[in-house]
Image 1 (cartoon, rainbow, N blue to C red):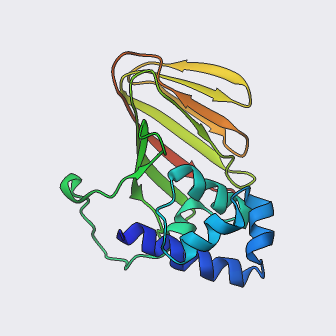
Image 2: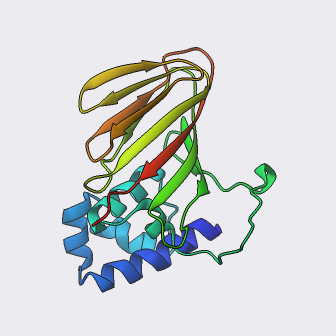
Length: 186
């Protein structure tokens, strides 16, 4: 079992208990079945990125909170050869955490990749959250609350991310971008 999945299992169990949610209550809030939540907590399955997003929304926590704490170093080098990717079920979308769990900050940075002509729906982030998406290579069609935005290589967009949004790669070549999530303070 991969380290990220172990951290998700441990954090899910801890956060669920801290909030006083039963598996049934969290299933209702997140849209993830009770059975799946139980299997994730007991590290019997590897959850997809979509499932982890749904659970974090159901718990009302950031995605990084659900990934769990890592030992904090004053300097951390992220080697691509050692990267841990989170994949969509169909393997057409992947995300690599670059910056998460920074003490005192509610911000996350992800590298995101979409296969040619693929799409990926994103769960709304907690209330007041904003996202900045930049296109490193390829093209992206981003839909936010039903409104489409076409982005070319080098473009960026900032949007209120506490609503449904959808990434779409309309091109015949891969899309690579960065997603910076700023969580609203409360």
